[in-house]
Image 1 (cartoon, helix red, strand yellow):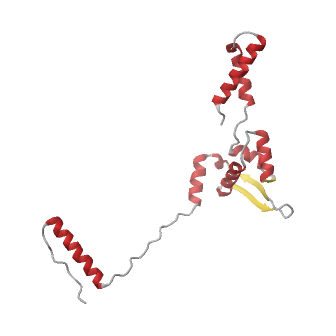
Image 2 (cartoon, rainbow, N blue to C red; image 1 turned 90 degrees about the vertical axis):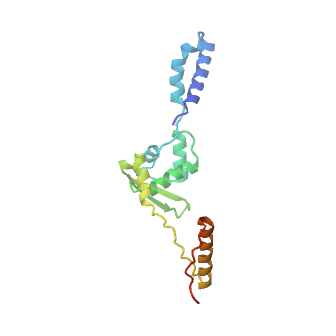
Image 3 (cartoon, rainbow, N blue to C red; image 1 turned 120 degrees about the vertical axis):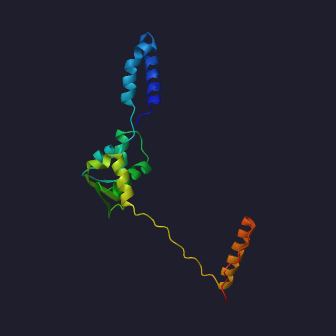
Length: 175
């Protein structure tokens, strides 16, 4: 996505330069300078752009980053790695990761991408369905002795008597 505030600022700078160089007002030059500013500004790489770079090629992370940074706004290795990780998690993408014996770097080979990968809702649903749900562990109650059970029953009877004003004798367990 482009930062349009930055595009407009750059366009006004170009228009003011044009006005200072060739005469006239900056407003006269703004239309053309806006086109120039918009075309010159590089945008962030999307998943579709990364797929175009990687498809049917064997590339290391540094090679991928070099190609992405040459075509688009400078990307961090973490951002590119996150996009590749999403490819591994998606059922719509066939991608391999092999460690190179010579360099020790990982080589990524993007074989196939289905159209569903680019639909954000489909990606989210697929990633959620692929992830197994964690079930909460049910902790068993510790066994209570007869004395502890009787103490709890007496305490409950006492609290009920305070709340209602009527004391009902609890059924105690005989030893």
